[in-house]
Length: 563
Image (cartoon, rainbow, N blue to C red; front, side, top):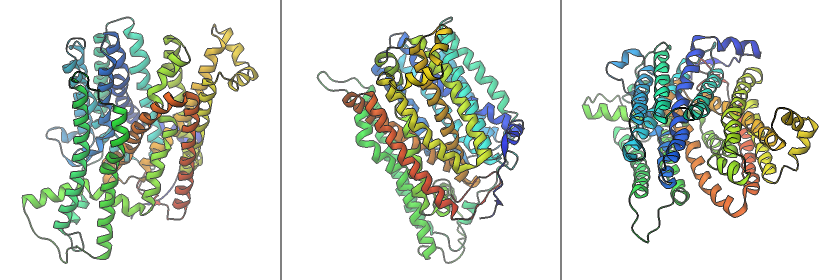
């Protein structure tokens, strides 16, 4: 693989200088446009629905629109390769970004003119449309970030800037939207947010972009030594059937949840569905395609089922099949070819890295409000304002550490720190026997009283402060790590496939965590989840060791690493 020898920026000055580049400024705006719809459609929307009396069961089903983010890799090849009519002149990635932002604006305006209390079906349709546009935009933004990375704006710094924009949007779509809703109607709030998204669209038009280049993977399929068309067709069939089954299973379950339940029948349980079908869905959508790609690579190295001479067949069917293969199989084959057996370590790292701090997100409000008995105002300030500010600090710290000490040391720190955040929450659940001495040692309890608050709030702020700084750093490290192993040739597809693992496993973990909380309580579950972080540390160390034993030759911008 051709490339340049790794060169990493050093120190705070270069980090700040990189933030001033046009690419970084565009990345900040794109990160914001990625985070705003997520906050509005997955989080804040539930407050509106609850206020107008929509049943919690219905709200729970509507929250499944977030699965568009978990499964966006299924249509990522389309975003990666399809050239949009008319919009294509805007750029390879920008054309899709602009289309998705326009779609989200339409969805937000549709939500504005729909009454959820009377038209919940239409309301849900617009919410799903916005979520679909947001998830598709993320594919294009992630591809853009990897495409434009270079020596002046390496992938680590662009990833950190992306998270800064995303977290800032979380404040706007979360705390600020809730603040506005207390003073104006919900439709007016979402109308204002549609205008904000319109501003992001105008900014996106000014972003630089890369030129669309012919797919080398598709062109190479005609050469001698490549897998035969018949074998490629079988591989596509296996992958296609796996994905169709997974999508069909999810759609079927969602329909059963929304349908009227006969008298005396039990409503389907999302937790049970994820518990019993989730692992099979992960296998079908990720592991089966990776296994197929690995097998095809093996056939090719063994000289089996390969073309003896150049294929000169020209037909519409052959061309379509080649493009489909180049979009669905070739990116995975490239990933497996570069990582080799190391792809198993990478998958293990991805599966465990975020679990330590990701599985309990759905239970945060019940923990704060019902178990700890904090007020809604206290929780809104602590989690939606103070917490997000702390997470932005964590993301910035992660970007700085990447520039200062490098990739794997930062990824390792990001694996270690969140473990102690779980122990802090466990201590908070137990009555803060260890948090209180820390507050007293640093006089934080006295400071809280002087500011008109109390020791209870100081405990919550200290815990949220540490948790958000550590997880912000970890998230910046994780995104940069994934971006670094993705090749520019298949940026959108490879990143979407790898990142989807965290969403799928996170959903599975939340279902199991809910049952464990009912059985063991919050404190014990926090400690059990912390143990998963030890697995993440082991996988990071193993991947660091493996990466140190191979050449550090990468693409410009520190992407496409064989590690």
